[in-house]
Structure formats: C-alpha cells, structure tokens
Length: 106
Image (cartoon, rainbow, N blue to C red; front, side, top):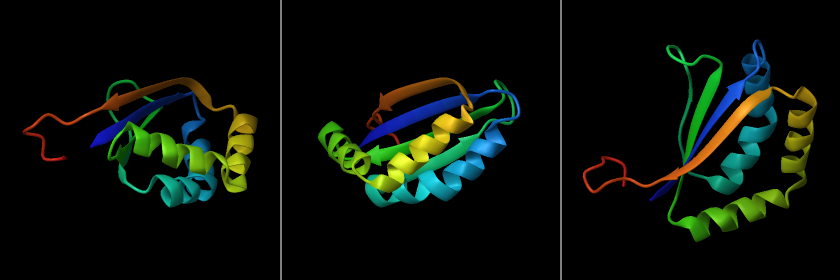
C-alpha cells in the first residue's frame, strides 16, 4: 500500500471553517474517487491549527488514476473554488509513505 499523507496548516481561526467546507463539499467527492480514507485528524498538542489526512492506494499508478478521475468531476471543481475563496491555508505538505514489513497497515 502507498499512503498519501497530507498535512495542512491553517491560518488562525480558519481550521473550523475549512473542516466544515471540506465535510460538505470535499469529502463526498474524495470518498467517491479516492476510496480508502485511512484517517483524518486534527492536532491537539504540538503545532496547532493542523489537519492530517491519510489515503491508501495500491500503487502510484492507482493514485494517479483516481486523482485524475476526480479532477474531471465538476463537484471537485466546486470544492476547489470554495476552498480558494476561503483562503484558509498557511502551509501544505504532501508525502507518499509506504508501510514497513511489520506495520499493521499493509
């Protein structure tokens, strides 16, 4: 499994607004196309105003195909438009991680 690990850091007071926007507009379309949501988290201790989400894929080709299919959906473009209007992000970090042989997630 390949895991798309994303960390979004928000401007102060913007995380709650973004989470509401994402839950209504982004999550349904990502669930439809990306499928394997491993987890969605917010920070409690450490660097605040962060959301981390993890999506699982069989390989990088699977990820590329699913994201390409999603990018064609008008509902995704509507979320992107609303996301840009909100301008909530201060920083975004994306990683692809893979489990080691003894990881409980394969």
